[in-house]
Length: 189
Figure (spheres, rainbow, N blue to C red):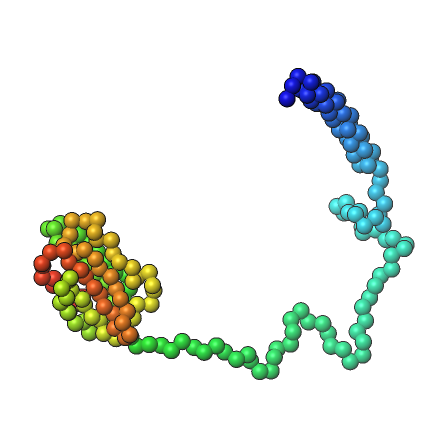
């Protein structure tokens, strides 16, 4: 952009600045004259002042609605249906125990605690595998998929390398993989 284009831009800006006050004064003058004129009470935008009676306009007729013979009164809601709608099939209550919230905690003596929350009374069987221990909780279920993720124990100095819940038919397997050859103890509280 050369010097010529900037000169035109300055001229356009000066013209716009000169016209703005002119347009503003005209619009303010129109507003003053419109405010001082009395409003027509038959104008649909007319709002009566406080304490003033509503206007009566000669050209407006009052409309009354009449019901045809045999018609019932209008109701805001439809009349009740004789037969209720069909209900959705209910979820059958299962007697299986619910296993939730697998957790890991390091203790002060250097040992680790891996535990789950169980709603119900399951039967627990301990199975030793080559990588660790699996606790089989029979007749249980894990209702939330987020509880099946592995616990992040590999960041800690602990003999537990991995712990997770797995659903196998009606049983839940709590797999605890160990780094070292240790003998875990299990108890149901």
